[in-house]
Length: 78
Image 1 (cartoon, rainbow, N blue to C red):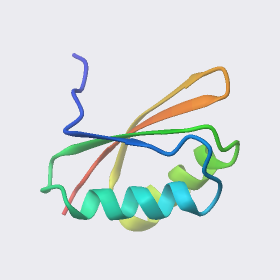
Image 2 (image 1 turned 45 degrees about the vertical axis):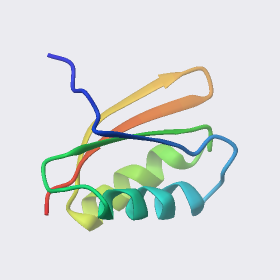
Image 3 (image 1 turned 60 degrees about the horizontal axis):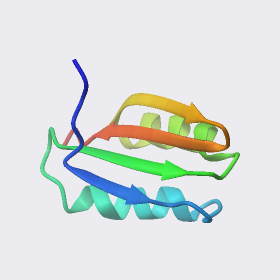
Image 4 (image 1 turned 90 degrees about the vertical axis):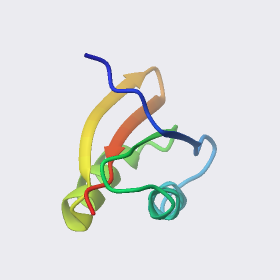
């Protein structure tokens, strides 16, 4: 079953650390259990998101890549 994000965040054209900072900020506005979709074309964003989700305790549900664009689904855990 496809996950429907509660909020979408466009970080195209932004480079480390901005996609992570904007993701963190966007998640603050969500309730636990809600899902954020973030798109980024920063080549480092996949490694950054994996590392950040592990450190922050938020759940990285999905990483999808289409060409140079990544789409991440993150569930706020607390």
